[in-house]
Image 1 (cartoon, rainbow, N blue to C red):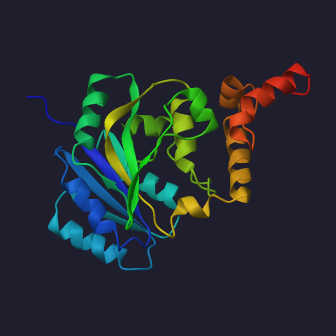
Image 2 (tube, rainbow, N blue to C red):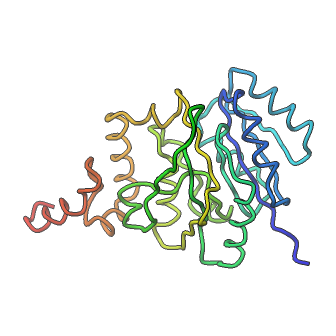
Image 3 (spheres, one colour):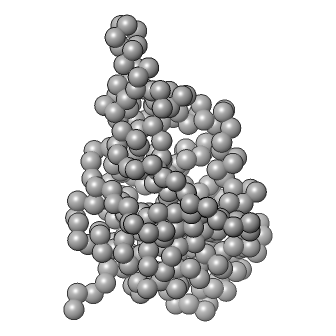
Length: 260
């Protein structure tokens, strides 16, 4: 029988001792059995490292790496670099996955060599309850305007290598969006599984809140335009604008007026 390919679940962790065990347990419950878990301690100042090492002592599939704080993109890259699996699943240290997610995603990656990214439907949750995360359907045009693929998607390690990993100099948030642009701008299929397989935890200190300011947004758009001008020209007829949904009509008008 064909052996199951190894999946490396890379969990960057910065001060997430409160949630880390639950995150790891959601992976350990997977119906898919050929996986390793790499917990990357990103210079935590709480008890995350001790907790991670305790989990590794109990489960041979868990490996702990520990570094000075360098940010989530660097932590992910260090984990993926050390990963032995041909398939990668980045999972933040406070989020959860469904037990069938990895198994169903691997089936797609194995059956469809043209598929580059497999993700699923998702919910956002906290102590008060949960609500569906309404994600737009994927297309490269939509990806040019906004990100609809959360970071906890499965992809090939070889594709991560080809694009040079997550951009560690992108400190203003949404580095997963830039990573998907890099990986998908020259093509490749994206497949969304038809069930809820990912649970995104809303916390008072979540990075998404800290990086949602208008200043961060301006920095992010300038960064993306500088790095992926070719992609935005192709998809939006010009640069990504602050009012992102208006980028293409605005650029098209500016071209018609001879101002672009």
